[in-house]
Image (cartoon, rainbow, N blue to C red):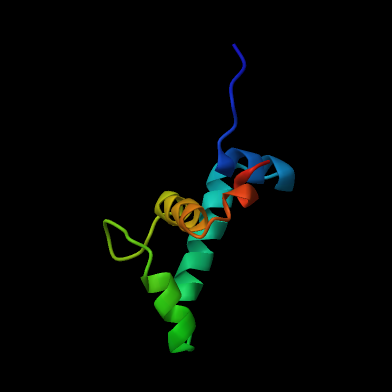
Length: 79
């Protein structure tokens, strides 16, 4: 049976890194967004629902997919 890649595995493979390294890159970007000096940009990152203080890569991805679907842009989700 063929194993299907998840989003993080695919991004990692395309960059020749591990999926954990890919998740760390995304986590770092989330942190940067939450610390952005521009309050409007920071507000966008703060809108991501999460269980803790900082969204996980999985929480960010869920939010991004749901937002694309709500905005009628789910065509961007096709690979």
